[in-house]
Length: 400
Image (cartoon, rainbow, N blue to C red; front, side, top):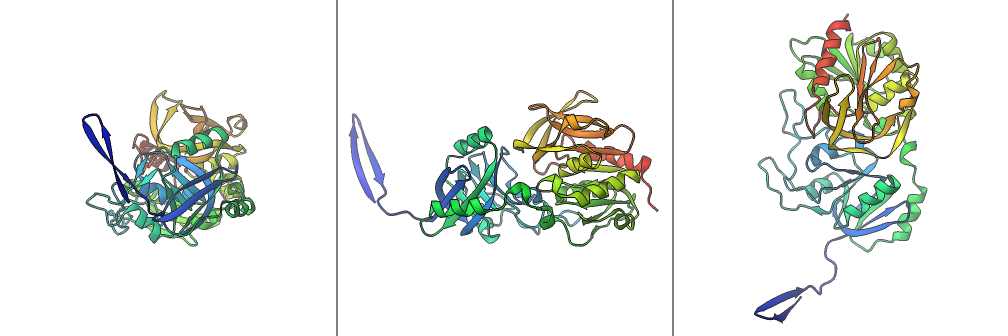
């Protein structure tokens, strides 16, 4: 290291020049269009392949990274500093024994992209730093790149596959690109299989009003919490369960959860939802659940150019004209032109791009939303959707 003295009028400046070689981990992000972003690595050493997406949320990185809907994706945070309040322990739980600060018990993104990762957090609940958490869970991260340029590219050209490498040695960009070209596309992989439970999971409470079955495609635990708060016991079942499996729990209602991936890949789940609707059980769909309900009734879905991921997405309730600020995380949407003859009517629309954000059936107890009424992270403006579902259960649900 050299210190240079620079004279300028009445001031003397000292310029520190670092001459040592690179210190730390090397990191490279390569996109399928050939773009290369070099930065510093943090978290785990290794490679990650996934669909590169971005979120505009300023806070809530613990909830976001543990949201199963991000399975198979490399997540870029647009807010420039991530990790300043550290990472709490999974052992902090609520009255229902659910973790207070996480949406599952592990990180689901394959990689993380930030402008700067905070190494010295400050918060009473923090037990480790953001980079330490990623290293502990085997997730590579890259910092020091121009995240604005990356997000602009994704907005203009659409989300795309990418490969992220964190290494102690220099990284071969050409070799990374060759690996990326051979990788399976995000839209072709059945990620729900990786995040759905293998057997029923029970969340029972005293003085329960009945049992709600969650068709678990990768549910956020805050959705379970919202149901428990409304005095329903909850049973989470695998995504492939059929109607007769679900009816064994004598449900008074069914929730089709959020989850990752392309909705058209889950024909068995769509078939079960169709049977549930014919049984006239009250049903609520959230995020992926919204898309699966639409498919079950004959509508179609499409992939958004760069998706909706953030905590401040405005949605308009077409029945009241009211606008709500919502938390969102999805890359697919229901095609409005395909609703004819399905019995479904548009309930919410996105105020920015007018895409469908919620559906209601004209005659049956079926409602669904594309956004996340449970928030976590995000605003609680639409938590009343769970109250509406509870009213539907009281009116139409039957526990036998």
